[in-house]
Image (cartoon, rainbow, N blue to C red; front, side, top):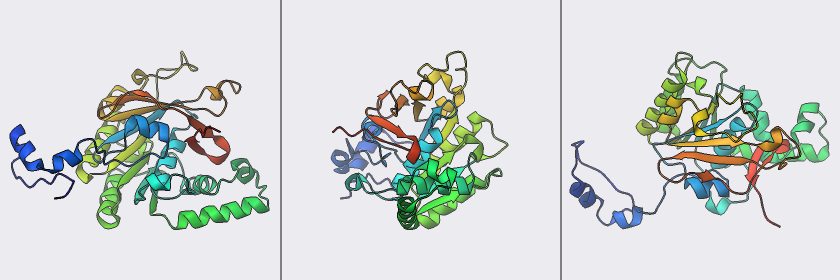
Amino acid sequence: MSSEMEWTEQSPVLTMAELLAKSGEALAHSLGHRPGLRTGLRGLDAVMGGLEPGTLTVLASRPGLGRSTLLQNICQWNAGGTLAGRDEERVVVPVLFASAEQSAEQIMVRALVTAGRVSRDHVRAGQLVGEDLRRLERGRSILEATSLFVLAPGVLADGQLVEQARRLVREQQVRLVGVDGLDAVGPGFSLGQAARALKALACELGVAVVATAPLGGVSRRPHWMPALEDLHDEVAFAADTVVLVHREDAYDPTSRPSEADLIVAKARSSRTAIAADVAFQVHYARFTDIVSA
């Protein structure tokens, strides 16, 4: 018997006895087994347990703290677009990355920097030496082998994201949809409407959806650790999981340099906690594990 629960009933209403009977032997296999994709960060995975199909995860932060970088890292890692490191735990899947925040060229450059581990400062300054060029070529070969689909026309028309997500799930078996900026859902949507639309999309397609959102109401305490109440109420309500991104060194370079706090502030299927041992490498445009010597 398959380890996955298979449902064949037509009625939308079932008794608990019927649910248990349908699960049969699969119940023992499915309990305690999280079918979700990983984020690529040990500390965050340990708290969240996985990006489960049919769920919406929101990554939120103040401006400039790395929520877009974190989202692209998660999408790129799941698509196999990074160097080997935790491959024994990674199941490579097709991924759609849609952005209302970046151009396609910006996404490509960030992907190359992360995949090849090339200094972003060298790329920006146009000061690429021999080793940089070799690393860029290595990054390019890694990315060319991925099934990472990019939708970044700048301004997305209403319904375009949903339409393309449906097509790619059907034709390319996409299992993860990353949405950089709730505006990507369409210019006619409020933040709350966009979040609800993405949650509905996740349920309809049976995929994990991860989106970025801004935090508001924190101007009075910009250096403080963010909290769930700083996120738009309707966005927080629609999300299954909320991860708040915070970096003290963004305000004081001498305070915990290169460390990041990823705060799981809402979790319907796991627990709330701060992910342990996460670093932010600005020169490689990536969040990564802090590895003990």
